[in-house]
Structure formats: structure tokens, C-alpha cells
Amino acid sequence: VSSKTAHLHFYNNASSLRRPCNNSCAYRLSSHSRRSRGHSYHGHHTSLRRVVVSSSSSSSSSSSSSSPSVESSPLVKICGVSSLACASNILEGPNSPNIDFMGMILWPGTADKPCKRYCANGNMDEVAKMVDLAKQKDVTPVGVFVDEDADTIMQVANQVGLEWVQLHGDGARAALRKLPMKLKVIYVMATDPQTGKLTTPKPGEDAVEDRKKSYDAGKNPMAAVDFISAGRRVVDYVLIDGPSPGSGESAVDAKSGGLAKLQVPRGCSRKGWILAGGLAPDNVQTAIETCPFMPNVVDVSSGVCTSDGITKDADKVSAFVSAATNAMVA
Image (cartoon, rainbow, N blue to C red; front, top):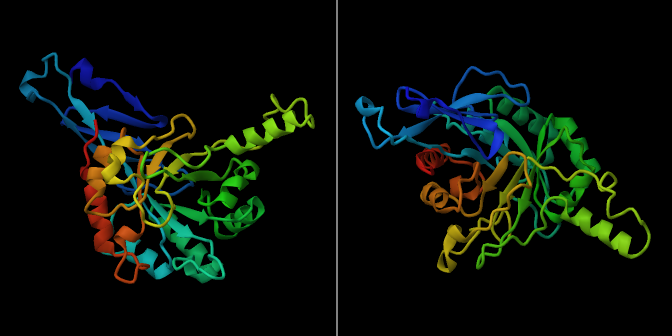
């Protein structure tokens, strides 16, 4: 192997590695992929994902000055898994797709609009079994919360064994500052479909605004430098969704420039960003390749459902994973 192909490539965050090798393949060390079996789940497991290394020259001309381009695909999150039977169909079938995250909505909805994908209709014993099953299959289970406060989120997470939570609505996002660091967090942000700009405050911005108001009001002269009392601001992923997250609407309208205009925030998450909103097996590859830079994870729910709009179709999930894996972003 030439010196140009033997070095390590770091990208996006320190938890992932690319390393070309001498058989024209590469492997990415990821903290979530179950594409390599045989790794027991310990809350933050690691495995290897095979990715493609392309080169303009043949192996016989490896001494050429041109170096190969290393390409990879994002991880896959299936959200809205609503029952143990649905989880089993995805994770234990004879041709179970290789997903990385499994999202479960733990918010019942409102009195006038119940959540149709409310996980197990609130049966926490069944939810706990789903969490255990995902861990056994080296898939990271994620609890999705919308309006719950920090105490409720922590209580539910402890009850069912969750280590990852998704803060989907205003109430749940506001709870971030009081959540313990032991909980891994996916922070959902909405976009303006015409401009691609974010319409949700970044993690911690509400705390900054609160400190400013306190300082301006003369209530706390140390507010400008008092970061400790502001609470947690660190998240693991930001999830970029459409104007109404969870509705299936695309993050950016194709007529206004599409995902190439998406303004993805940098530097406000530890592991990177997740693309969601209107994804399906027939468009995820194009979506990934159109983004201004590669998402670390792609998230789908309604795009892989059966006709009832709730149950996940294992064949559609497999097709989605295949399409996402085929996306080539240098």
C-alpha cells in the first residue's frame, strides 16, 4: 500500500475513522453500526462498516501520484417503531435489514390528536422488551419525546433502559438543560422549506437568551459569564427535519433549490447531524448526494410504512438501507 493510502482519515468527529486498505476497500469505525455481527451491546458498542475506495488508476500503477478517493454512506435510523411485533419483524426476520438506530415515540399525543405511532400504547413493559431486543441485535434504541419535562424523560428512560433520547418538540428541547450527561441526546431542529434556514434555536441558545434577559434586568450581574447555572447545552446529534418535524415534509422544497440549500449547523453536536423529512427508498440516495455535506445518519418513518401508515415494512426498510448505502459522497 502506498503511503498516500495508508494514513488515517478523520472526519466530522473523533468517534469515526476511515482507513483505506490494500484490497480497494475501506472500513469506517462507528459507534453504532451493526453491519459487522458479533459485538455485544454495552451501551456504546463499536463495529466496522465497509465502504468503497475508488481510484482512477489500477493497482498495478499504485505508485501514481493520484490518490484514491474514500467514500462512505451514513448510518440508518428507523423511527416510529410502534410495537414489539414490529420491532421483531425488522430485527429478527430472515433477511433483517442492517439498521443502526430504532426510534420509539413515547409521547401519546394530545386529546384532540392522539399520536398514531405511540409506542405500545404506553405499555412500558412492552417498550422495555423492545429496548432489550434492539440491544441484543446491536441496534441503538432511541426514545422520542415531544412535550415532556426533564424529570419525566429521565423517569421513562430509567424505567425501560434507554440510554438515548430524542428531543422532538419545544417542551422536550427545553428540558435539555436539566438532563444528565449520561443520557445521549438527539436534538430535533426544523427548517424553512423555501430558504433551508433553521427555524429552531440551536442547543443551548434558549439558555443564553435567558441569561441575557436576567443580566439586562439587573437580576444577575454575573449572568453574562455564568455558564454553569445555565445547565446542559451539549447534544450528540442534531436532527434536521422539515418545517413540521415528524410530518414527513421535506426539509427543503425542491422548487426552491432543494437540499443543496440546507443550512446545516456546525459545531453544536458531538457526533454530527441527521437528515430527516420525507425520505423514502426512492429518494434517500439522491437526498444524501444533494446535501451540502454528508449527513452522519439518515432517518425515516412514514417512508417505510405499510399501507396503514404505522407498521414498518421490512422490505421497504431493506430497500431504504440499500439505497442509503449506495449513496456516494466523497
